[in-house]
Length: 167
Image 1 (cartoon, rainbow, N blue to C red):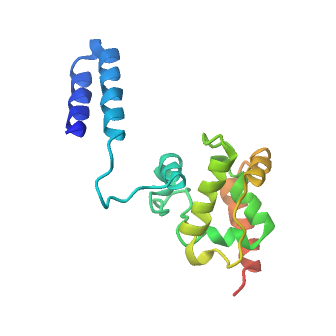
Image 2 (image 1 turned 30 degrees about the horizontal axis):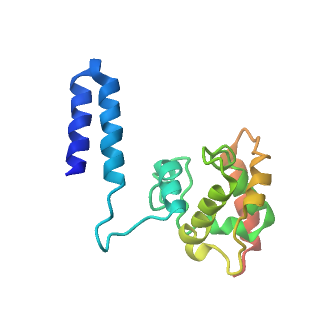
């Protein structure tokens, strides 16, 4: 019911641009009412790291870590290879999408990186890989990659990391 109310408010905003502020207030109110309701019994709930990934990373990398065939790398079952070397680990913490992420809290970003590394990375993440910490993320994001050719740099770092992976 609340979702229907929200849709109706959004439709009203679209049809009557002169009433945008009133519509916006109504849309926000409807959303907050909907968000504050108890979830349906048995419904799956997303944790904070997953929600942050979906909100800040999933648009390009795909909601399941599989991006379209573009310059955006696939994460699913691949990203863990970077953890095979210190250089690779630092690289994934310094890429622009991480170092300049809108997720400003270092612990929240570390949680997203751990979600990506351990859940998305799957078998590509070596056993014994240490989780990212807030302090590590803070240090890495202060040193963003300055390369003008991220694709070439990624290929080089990945090749060196893969050579160090346990077989």
